[in-house]
Amino acid sequence: MIRTLQDHGIHLGLDVFMEHTVVTLLKDGDRIAGAFGYDRERGRFHLFRAKAVVLATGGSAGLIKSRATVGSIPATATPLPITLGRR
Image (cartoon, rainbow, N blue to C red; front, side, top):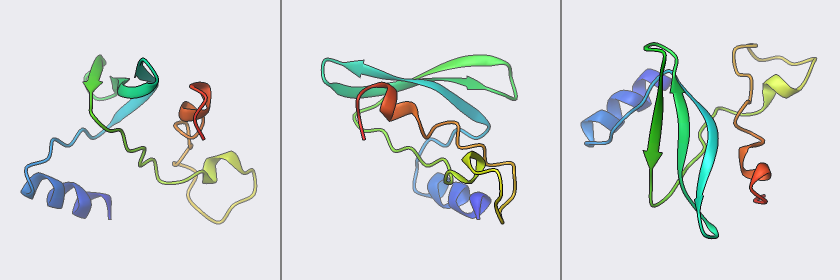
């Protein structure tokens, strides 16, 4: 499913960043203005500036010890908005 969404996004002219881990969200005053992340394939950091941020991390199955899903979805982005006082 991920590859299908990636291909569709590219077809629509979107910038798609695969294999990136967001370390923190960035604020400008009281709004989220982007994200700071890490490109796991190239070993480089990346700054994303944005008018809107959508966290599409796949869910929080990695937070639960006993689950019926794959363990490769660690849900590391789930707490990001909480650290900035968002819900």
